[in-house]
Image (cartoon, rainbow, N blue to C red):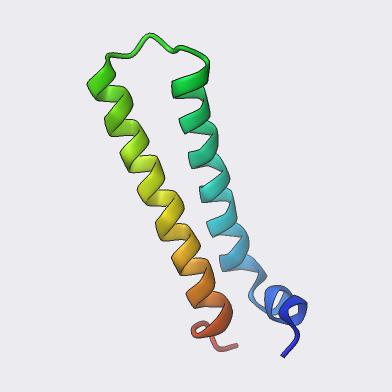
Length: 71
């Protein structure tokens, strides 16, 4: 099947996961580049949680695109 057809067919879960990935990336950028006054352990904890969300969303996007969510 065409990859663009699969993305159109599974648009809702795909876009929700993409928004979660983008939001997590923005949080990581703000925490590290904008020098928010957070203690270092809290910055590291936030980064680990956001990176986990990014990796999990990427895996779920691939699963949704190729395996799951039969319409």
